[in-house]
Length: 589
Image 1 (cartoon, rainbow, N blue to C red):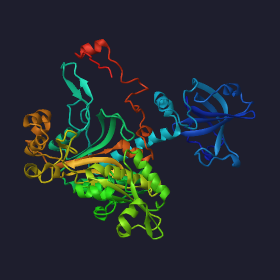
Image 2: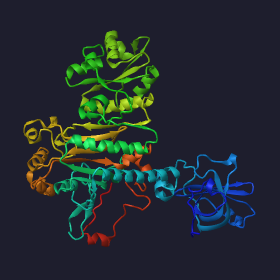
Image 3: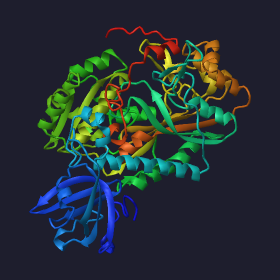
Image 4: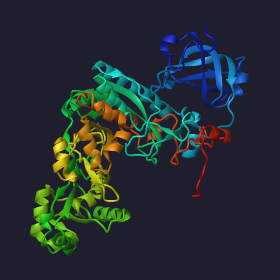
């Protein structure tokens, strides 16, 4: 017999009754039932109930065993009594009567429990992540992550993509976040950057003629942590294709991602035909460029019903600023003063002056807004929005670019509070036609999305149109309110590339210096090409039904971008700094 096991802890069934077996694993929990000792033995594959009675020569050793000790047991497989069968456990029809026990490893008193998975402080969970990963739910999430990635690889290879690796030590690239810099010992005073994405390399692979590239790519960005974005590193399904239009990228990847979600959906519905929603439409209809389409609420513009009305708070601003609009957010079944007051209080908690509303009952509108604009305007709003008695509608005022995010947050809040969101589906879509440029915090022109994208209209648009009106061949994939991919058709023409950067304030020399590899490559025959990058972490998070990426990542950092398990980041020794020609000048915070 094998030194440690003849079977795993998830393998034994009724067909094994009568066999002598050997199992090894962790003691999940111990139970004393009037002389009989029961303990569940756990390994990566599952759990088996083990039993020992006082007549067994191993009983004295068994009495010493505690949770999370690692043991080997030999014993006989027996059928459980019918009343003791556990239908929720693959091994629930049997138990193993122990004849011999060997303690392989003793566990100290645990700093956190494994059995039962109670809530526990995150700093403890991360410091003892190896214990946290023994918990059933987290362990299953990590296993599912590996299966999702394996499925991605199979699906990409099946449609003719080849997996190519790209460098980890590279040059800085403007991907919208801070770089992690790596000092060069051989070249004092110079630094590598960890790649924010393999963007330039995958484009160079297209120029080199590889046609269809993909990679499960590690990416590194020195960003502040959020629930849906880990600090430090993340992984993406990165891909690029030559001689394609953006429609071909969509038609290629939507079936891949749809079938991936279907494989792991556990009965939830998955969008088969992805809507293609222009960015401007998404902003006006949902208040977001990553709308949750499980929420049926759609925002509408109702400015005309307030212009010249008795509701002076709105009417006055509409008259004084032609760009001010009123947006209406319907709330089906939300037609009570209590709900409307609750939403108004929520808005004030978000830093807003409030949230105007009308609720409908007995065929008429109620509330201060209805009283001020009158019955005719109230009825017109009700008709436009398709509302009925028992419903409500909320109003947001302002310039769209200033207030759309709040309108979107209100839409989400209303849908959630009224249980309108269909949680039994994965709702996927493309958001298309993004603006090429936007104004930054200093009111200067900057790229709104990927700087390597092709502007619609090409160099003629860059030369002759208002930069803020130019759209790009850029697109995002969205699922359940999360951006899960971003992509574009690339700008492969050197003069168009230079002009695009010049409008953001970079000179030709700066473009050639900072993006020399791409700039040179584009002068030697570059095919039209495009692609996307799908965020693996977010996809797995959605599939596992989690709200935090830490629940699907084996060894994440905490909210302060620290690895509590390994103690990183840590100080460098004086000798290491000397080798790198670095002298520290740390400023007090």
